[in-house]
Length: 206
Length: 159
Image (cartoon, rainbow over all chains, first blue to last red):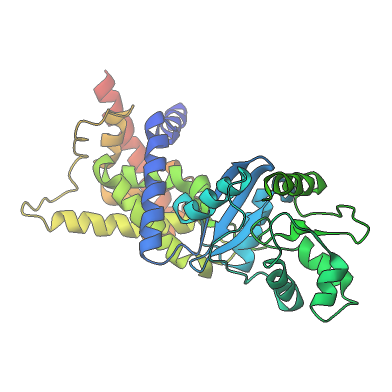
């Protein structure tokens, strides 16, 4: 049986060449998948001053942005379940998003020009996201004001939920919605990230 | 229970599928066949039952793609009776254990399949049998014969 074990070890071992082969294979798969329209969800990780962000896009547009705190693996599982299991790490589809986010974090960009896929937000939550997209860089507004704006002044909590479940934070700026008493309120990426984004915008406001 | 992102499937099973392809079609065509295997798997992936044996499913697709590749090769201008030995790697550095891989590649089809799917891919004989379109017992015998042949080839070469 030693011979079998020996063969098994020898045929089963990962050498450096197989690591390189896997990298080549992955690149070929991504390319073939996108040209055959099989790359339903592409993602990449972007390092930013508020931690590493997971960026994911469908062929329609950016479908998900997630902070470390949300657990990138959990978010990818969620995308596989709710959008499509054809999920691959394929940075090039996210190049425009990554570039614009880099510009945003360096203070040079005040608004995003990216196609979005808001299929993960429904009904009232989606209405809220549409309203948030109009908020000016460096400004803040209260949850109550957003609710009133949408003709539903009692829906303050629903506005909070819409912000907490925003599938594309930063790009759809739910961090600009704060409590009526002026305190920061909670945030999908954690309250520290929200403070950092608001400070960045205050510093770079014209 | 739901399907994990396909990225996870590639990371988890990619090296094993690559070894399967390398053993069946040789190093020269292994990446082509492996790449076609994963593309076909990606296309069919959303219809896979979440609790399936993913390794076995991939091995079945790899087996089909490998047969396609061998047929394509055999339609070439110089038909050969048996699978050609793994050709050279065009100046790429040779991987370790070339002799062993060549010995695997020169086994008769069924033995090679049984050795590869059982020993390299780690599939139980019942599934090896399904892939090779034979019974579990026949797969077990083919693997034993294959290992015996490998043992004599490799021992002869090293002595």
